[in-house]
Every structure is written in structure tokens, then in C-alpha cells.
Length: 418
Image (cartoon, rainbow, N blue to C red; front, top):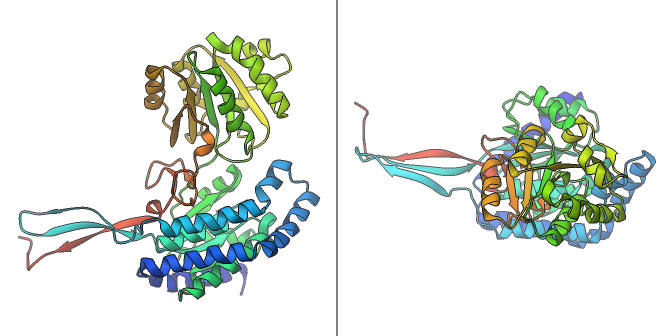
């Protein structure tokens, strides 16, 4: 059996048991989630040992410090994975929820009911915690899942997946409901994204190159975001002490994530007071700055920004900086160069805040807070399957409800259409 045949066979096995998940009770699904969480916590030492293999290989391959950080499984991150599964277990089950309805003049009672999507393929890179997050959310929403992580995290992903399958079995659910593709052959991705009739939707998580490849090659629906070019705009009325902390957090807390700030916009009226001090803070954090001409007059050590810098998702300690003269100019910049992911304004002026919120068309828009909060865990979803910048079906962090569709159930007592 070649790679394509083996992937279709794997997807077929998931599809064959997905209907059991679709009708599983909330109690059984929650029991499985808690067993998964307990297993991750109990096997933390083994998970870290397997992860160490990936870290060693990554260092040998020359991965950046930021990417190695995304790859690392610490005690804290393993505990966060387990806690995320427990939070998902504690959330209301969306399956079967009635989300609308009406009674027609002829007596037909029409209800709109949440149902699972079916089989979801998740293709992701670097962060092994996605294995647990994706499997847990898909399970709670009644979906089967096929996981395909990056080769840089293979040992970590396999270890986590084995723990998750044990949790499914402990609750009496089929272990085949969560499958992991263990081959690193790129043909596997091509086979997965063209598995019509076996996979219902593909969600890619990773770099822009991966996502564009999936979108261009897929013959089944894709939910995605291409990249996270996130902005923080410091308005003329901003509390500058607050703005410093927000900007430092948005850029430096975890620079390799899609919700990290990539471009800082500063109103010209406060640039002379704000940028020199902010520049010192960034220098201490080893952030390389690339600025417009007005920025470089205040921060002479900054490199000259090119047109490409405004479009860039650095995923590293690099930041583009531009001075603007109004909220409108900041919004124009975001509309032209942004990725509709997450953008923030720091201001004490309610009118400017309202203008920004109404005028910026992104999946998440913030007032006086870091863009780093665009995350399912932080939004109270327990975890997330990914972040969507699409406008159809799902937008922003995708939690349980976003992993369901709906059907119409119609009750009658003999009505016939005339």
C-alpha cells in the first residue's frame, strides 16, 4: 500500500467510527477528556523525554530560538495542555443544541440544531500542544480527527497522541476516532486534503507557505488564516506607561506566535515622548527595529523599513515601526498591510477607540490590551482548533461551536405541500 492509499485507509477508519462520536453522550465525552488530561499529567516526564529528541534534532537543523521555543514541552506547557482538556470537558456540549426555530402557519415546527462537522483534518507545524488541543475540541464537538503535525515535532506528537488514545479507550470510545499520520512524506498531505467523501474539512495551522499549499491543493473545504500581521496603534491620548507595557507584551511575550505584534503605529503628536523610551525597552529585549523615516529620526539605530517590512510576519524579535498622524491613517495602514487577524489601539479617547473598533475589519480588535490574547484558552474556550481570518463559517479563535454545523429538523402531523 503506497502513501496515498494508506492515508485514505486511515481517513476511512476515522470516518467509520465518527458516527459513534456524533451520538456519544456529553458524560462519556467528558470522561474521555478528563482521562486524557490525567494521562498527560501522569506521563509528563516521558513526554518531555520524547520532546527532547525533537529539540535536539531541531537544534542540529538550525531552527531559530523562537521556533525551538514553540517546539518545547515544559512542565508548565504540559500542565496547560491537561488543563485545556479539563476546561473543554467543563464547557457546555454544543451538539444537539437548538439554535433557532419557528412554527409555520401550517403547523410545521422547524428547529435548527447543532451537529458535528464529521471528520476534520488538522495540519500543523511546530507546536506539539496542538495535538492535544485539536483532539480534545474535536472529540467534545463529536468529530473524528486526523492529525498531521510537522516533522520537527514528530516524536512529541506521537507521544501525546498515544496518551490521548488511551483516554478514549478508558471512556469506552473508539481509539480510531483520533488518528495521527506518522509519516513525514509530503505526499501524505496531498492525499489528506484530497480525501473527498472521507474528510469533511481541513484546518491548516502553521506558516503562510504551508497554508497556501493546502488551499491551492485541497478539493475539500479549508478554514484558515494565512498569517498574523498584527498591529498596535498608540494614539495621541494614550496612557504612555500603559502603552509601553502593552507593546512590550504584544511583541516579546512569545514573538513566534501568530498573535504577536509585527508593526507598531505611533501617533506623531506623542512619538517624540513615546518612541525613545519604548526604543530603550525594545533594545533591552533585543528587538530589532525597522522604521519609517520619521521613526529613524527618533530612533537612529533602527534600520530603514522597506515596503516588504509592512507586510512581514517576522515570528521573531523584529518589529516594524511607523509614525502616523491620525487614527484614520493608522486604519488605512492596517487595511493595506494587515492580515485581518488581531489589531489594537491604546487610547484614553472613547471616540477614537470607537472609530478604531468600527473601522478595523479584523477577526479580533482590541482597546487597551495586548493582541496576545487572541487565543481560545484566553477567550474561555478551553483551547482552540486554530484562528480563522475567513468570513464564512468561522472567524477568530475556533472553539467548540465553530467545529459544528447545523441541520434543520422539521416536525409535522401529516402536512402536505399544496
